[in-house]
Amino acid sequence: WCAMFIPAMGSFLVGDILGPTMYRKGLDLNEVVILLALVFWFSVWGGVGAVLAVPIMCTVKIIMEEIPHEGTHALARMMAPAPSNGNGNVGGGLGGLNGIGGGDGGGGSGGG
Image (tube, rainbow, N blue to C red):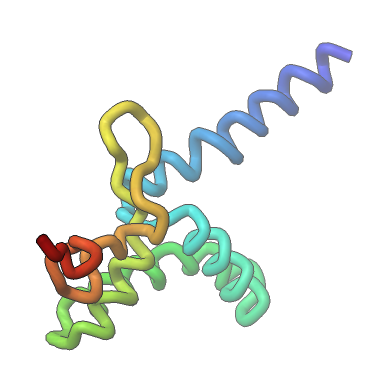
């Protein structure tokens, strides 16, 4: 049973935990975006699409950041990983969209 358990555990740790974390830090893409890109491009082009999915999404994100339009910048921020709050937990809830919408972030009219 050890001959099956140890490789399976190693595959799980690298493929499902370590890999997406490294992709997120190195590529500046959200794990969900990577997964959806893999599914979409695999369904379009098969194995070649799966290999090219992450580079395509990195290119799309860079292009959207460079287009001078707030809508494309918002989409690029949605594709980015959520900011970390310093203790390993992910802060915010919308994948980096906390600053969208303008305003000072305060609520209410603040009467006195």
